[in-house]
Length: 194
Image (cartoon, rainbow, N blue to C red; front, side, top):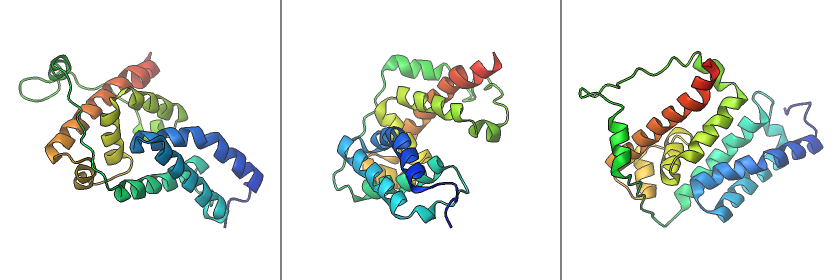
């Protein structure tokens, strides 16, 4: 049973409104505009062909993004070419990262209290800031982060797809998480406490 408040014309308008964000998300993962467009198009067709699939138990955007997530995974698994990810950082960045940690490996500063994470995740503005923070990451680091955390691919799948070692994958994920933490501290959590 589909959401009774969502007629076909409204569904079509809402899908068109979210299309640019879906394309940006797909492009971040697929790194090919044509493939990203195809994945989004396949997603939108799937939603329109089965409007009864959306039952209104979540936001339409969540439902559509979930479908897109699996279209992207299918695309990544189908890709036959292998790519090398080289997220080599310069020495000054490594020094900046090292400055965050004490000799015993613990962080120098305790992260700020972020409040109630469940409530924060429900806020639309948080995802806008998160998207900006992801766009500030080096493209290759953002991609591996999204593959692991959003697409929920296993590390061995990511390594195979990107032709990298597991230790390289963990280093890239570590760097991405540090940068995201810093960006969110500055642009979301710090701004909310001011």
